[in-house]
Length: 414
Image (cartoon, rainbow, N blue to C red; front, side):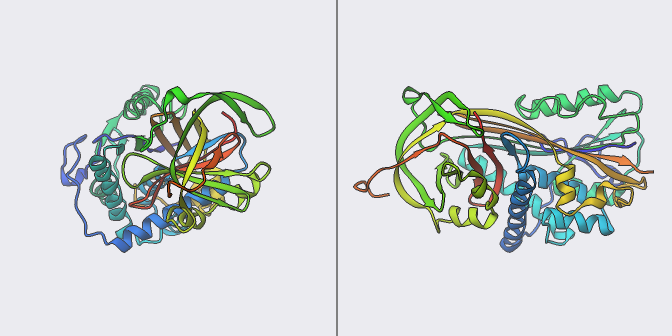
């Protein structure tokens, strides 16, 4: 069995060269700039948003808290899509909501990630995105595929000996993952996942850290009750502040946009009314979030906000969800990844890990995804609104400038 592992992680110039162009192994080729229109970027981000909420709908039946990076998953599977052909490519594009032709999709991802990195540098928040390719020594990959990954995703080929040292290779990659995510994602690839017949590991990463525009005063934080799903009551640290925020109340929910210090970056919180969580969650959609975030529903109000500090990590198996979204052939013996290599490869499983920490100062988040491929056989005078987030809620972190949903999740228990 051959494994192709695609992992979303934090910024590192582990980029992949086109060996046929005689670029040294382990050295990234300079990124190629492309003329990306605003319409193409909007089309890409709109499709990515649609995928983010389609995936949420597929995962909402799982128990407990939920958290993932849809941007990270989209980017990881874009690396996989670059090697697909025929029905396999068509299904991946449909499931991921890739509407741009491949010749434009990969430059569009390059342009989007460059825009995100540029915004982070200019606005003063941390947003690191990276790609790397780890290949079996002596194994041949198609020149056009390598060139696409090198030019558009900036990934340099790193050679490992999976055949003779599979677990040592796994430890090496996991150490890189941990380093690139500030030690937030550890042991992404579990023992036994890399075997002697592994031939390829494609890696991508994301790491995020940003301060609130209006930090909470830690002196105002104190223990309070959180009413968890299922009826349990938890004594948890609650943060408090009264400030002007973009706020809305709708049928069975309240919504608040909590801005970061970096302009155009915010956490959107949806708090369903008691007893309405399932209904609000089932109705969650890209269109609803866009209406809220665009200001169609939110208005400036003075809000007395109480919310919990929280920190948790998530470990998701995504193969079934992705198959249900419309790409089952990629997981079958009929998969066609002939643009990647001459070997008959199919995806064996997709694993995603993510971490989130929210406190008085701001937010830290990281994510990693593994795609394993096998060889087949407000005015001051207005009244204050109270928003007490003491029960299950949904949240997302969105870059409003590019329209990218970076992270999405729910908190059922703290």
